[in-house]
Image (tube, protein in one colour):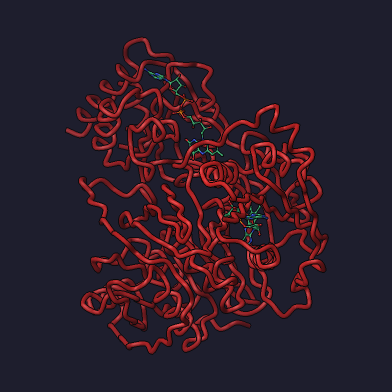
Length: 326
Length: 259
Ligand SMILES: Cc1cc2nc3c(=O)[nH]c(=O)nc-3n(C[C@H](O)[C@H](O)[C@H](O)COP(=O)(O)OP(=O)(O)OC[C@H]3O[C@@H](n4cnc5c(N)ncnc54)[C@H](O)[C@@H]3O)c2cc1C
Ligand SMILES: Cc1cc2nc3c(=O)[nH]c(=O)nc-3n(C[C@H](O)[C@H](O)[C@H](O)COP(=O)(O)OP(=O)(O)OC[C@H]3O[C@@H](n4cnc5c(N)ncnc54)[C@H](O)[C@@H]3O)c2cc1C
């Protein structure tokens, strides 16, 4: 039998400004389901206390804190702290967000500690032999379970995939001693924080997503997609063709090489439904498509399809939604 | 400057991608096996530098099964100078750590100033191999770059993440991984295709690299313990707009409690 109160180490990602990233809630929720969540916060000293308290609020029974001084190399302080935390805690599993930073840190930590790595995990559970990682691969066509042959399971967890949340804990915060590994790393020459202009939900994990494609025609026209999203309280996504055409930033891209979403409702506007786009959204509960081409492949997977011009259908839809809400 | 480009052979995303429900391995033969698009873009970055800087060498490196050489020839036809294929039965079903250990062994065997990889593959999708390789070789890894500027001594680029946009710089030797924001790869010319036939393509085994598969059981590995296929989605209703489709769609959403 494995011990279901065994420590599960969670790397809590903190922005340079000190904000605990949204992925932390799901990671700690997942950890609480298979053991006792222990959080690691690696942040500039000035913001780490607040971040550690936030981690406890999100369910960490213990929080280990290490410094990430301004001007330090990009990731070395975090990888070194994670190695120190794992050595001190001996966790059954280490859960890390499948984010830009998280994946790099998980990669370096897994080979440094000789641990097995499960990638892009959508949930975790436990069997008689230990932690099990669940994956949804090839656009959700297959559900795969994986495990480590021995030792700690390190997993990168798909952002927004986990709905479980852990109960808040009384903060128990400890400073962690970290010996720098001296591993070579990159230098940060410049950093510009992303300014989020709207209070729209995040694409990852959103309940409703409205995406626009090349059919939307221009960056200006994309406002129509955003208006529909706002009428539904939805996040905004896009096809790769819309990103390539410069209508929206790359972070909006849904699909094979973009974000994978699994919302309650997905509305595709002026998107043909190429296989690589479908790979990122076809596990949505309900799919709606608006496209003027009746042969567009998106209709093959749509629960409700409208063959029509988006510039007449979408404004009417927005009006009808507003009317229903009043 | 010696640039090694890491390319992965993957099932074509345009085709049918299947996993064998018994072995958990990729069903080779279900669809076409191609060079991952991001790997072709990585070759493009290397060739662009090499063309502007004489004395550069571009080597394409792939670990994979017997089908790989055909795809490596494409890299040679685009303009790479040499290709290396790591082929060994002990690598069938390799996980990320075994893949990275093997690639790192080949890279130290070969030597390099710069390694260029894709940020993420379209099949395994781990986005971890470049950092793993860098950790094993103790070199910096500038990953997820959407711009790349290479000089004789370092490489600089923009790295966009969830929190912001970084400009990062790594002293050579280094590993970088690139995103699809970088240009599409060139098509091989007829001349390039002819020339590729005469370019060296070496095959290496684990023994050649003095590496092991870790099968002795000392290293932990990630293994598939179960696999299921999700049923395909069926189409629902499709209406043709006759002036009231927006209203009808709103009705559908309301009826399904989606508003
Ligand atoms: C390796 C690889 C990875 C990829 N990854 C992704 C990915 O992550 N995400 C992704 O989206 N794509 C991805 N692609 C690209 C994909 O193959 C398609 O090229 C892309 O999805 C097309 O985007 P689109 O549907 O917006 O454009 P198009 O295919 O050009 O479709 C535009 C649609 O708009 C419709 N339209 C035009 N005007 C109107 C109007 N007025 N009203 C209504 N409808 C209208 C047209 O009928 C058409 O169906 C990838 C491709 C490769 C090879
Ligand atoms: C559906 C699926 C799920 C998988 N899940 C896991 C898992 O959870 N854990 C695990 O350990 N393994 C997993 N694997 C195995 C893993 O995909 C392979 O080990 C693979 O060789 C490397 O991982 P990646 O595809 O994630 O590469 P990424 O890290 O996504 O690849 C990034 C870049 O690294 C380079 N690269 C990657 N592989 C090679 C190669 N063979 N030769 C040359 N360059 C290469 C390329 O430049 C590529 O663009 C999975 C495989 C599949 C098909």
